[in-house]
Amino acid sequence: MADHDDKEVVALTQNVGEVTIEDRGSDKPKEEEDKDKEGGVMGFIKDVGHAIGGLFSWGSPDADISGFDIPVLNTKRAEIIISVLITNPNPIPIPLVDMIYEISSDGRKLCSGTIPDAGTVHAHGSETVKIPLNLIYKDIVDTFDDIEPGQVLPYLCKVTLLVDVPVIGRITIPLEKKGEIPIPHKPDVDLEKIDWDHLSLEETSATLHLTFKNMNKFDVGINSFEYDLQLGDVSIGKATLKEATSVKGEDIGILQVPVSFRPKDFGGALWDILRGRGTGYTMVGSVEVDTPFGPMHLPFSKTSETTLKGKEDDEE
Image (cartoon, rainbow, N blue to C red; front, side, top):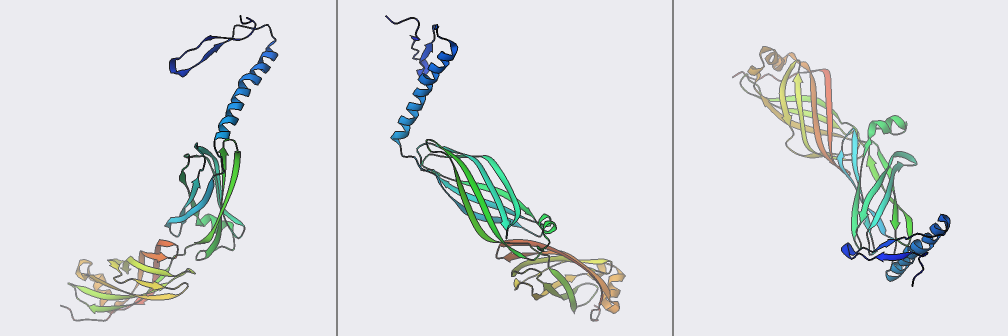
């Protein structure tokens, strides 16, 4: 018969697969009881863990920076998405404790941060974890005196993964990727002259000759070009570039943009300007360009006191 001073199993509950163990009491001091429990229960758990570990082959996960994409790029900021592909060779899911990232250029830190509890990688599976971040160009230019708009910066992207792997423990996986990223500059757009193709109160058509100075060190392909032209104090409306063109880095391109409008809709002041009085002008617009780094939206504005004169034509 079992000694009542020892622990007894008094109930085996089959419901929900549980086994209930009650302690009838003991004459041993509490410190000795705790020690027994540690050696018994904890020892049992450790033995089970080692036994399970022996049944499987455990390994460190594999990781790689699979993408460095710039979906948004303009003169104010670059929206960057870093994609990290992680492969788990183990038979159970593994948690990602932290993801630490940093982007630098020639030793100058541009941005950094930490993503805690970045998720879980499924057993024998792969997961792509995305790190979204923003580079604010004004902050970079204000911080580093040798960085200016129009430059192309070499970058070093570092990502460090902290992963908990059963049996193996916590491991650190460092990753790196190199490339280039631009600091875009607004173009300098100027209206060189206007050729009046037809001049009348009812309908006036003209060709605008524009100079487009690419202020960046990289080439741009101009896909669309829209602006509002104001002669004197009168806005004659919007004009759009019909044919795409390209301009090399730090070079000047010539754009010819057709425009048409009805002078009588604007009153006598515009008609006097068109008939030869001449005037200054204001342009405000934007250009959509392709670059080696992806599509880009570039705004521009120009105000000039230079007198523009058109050629006279017979009034209809």
